[in-house]
Amino acid sequence: MTSYATSTARSEMSELRRLRSLLPPEMQSWVTVESTSAVNPPLIACEEIGKDQVEVQVDLVRWDQLALDQRNLLFWHEVSRIQNDTIPKDGWEMAALAIGLGGAVGELWVQDGLLLMLALTLCGVSGYRLYKKNNGERILQQAIDADEQAIALATRFGYTLPNAYKSLGSALKALIEQNPKKRQRSRYEARLQALKQSAAKAKAKAKTIRDESI
View 1 (cartoon, rainbow, N blue to C red):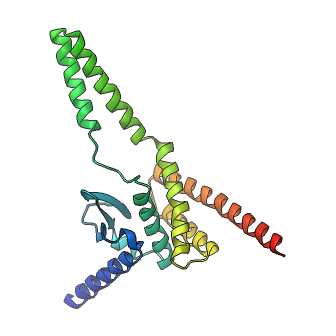
View 2: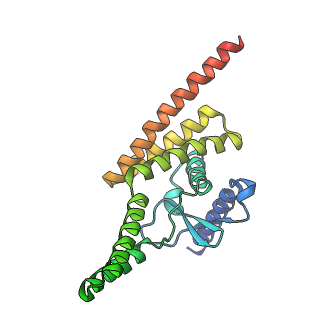
View 3: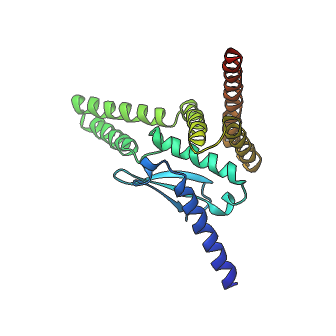
């Protein structure tokens, strides 16, 4: 039993080191890769852990069930999200909304029109920011953009363009099959459809360039 646990720990550490080696050199000083300790965590996610420090957290039990190329492209997707500055942040919006609502109720009681307007303005600004943050279409577009950038990162690390598309496509298919939540599954399906369209455009562009060079 001890031998098995030791072997598993070594395998996990080896995978974390491998993933760190897939970070672009310019990110290796401020992005870390660790195994997640959360209950029912996502397969892979990013979190700000301090000023100018980001941690990629991986559920290594489920991660190990994917093929190596699938893991690589999903990892580069997260790297791209970091580069695009689209990872979730602990914002001020919820606190501001609570303060604004509390202030509005209080000012209704004391009937101070100016302070009531200020409280309602704070509610409006924070509410709008929360809406933008959690807008489904915006989140999906950010994921599609990160997929495109992950393909570019893969070619930077030696993948051919067709293989990069194929690896990410098969990874998304695996996530669709594994995910029981309809909303999340639909998001993966939309990403896969966008990836297929992008691959078709890249193939047509490569054919045009090849034909022109003949």
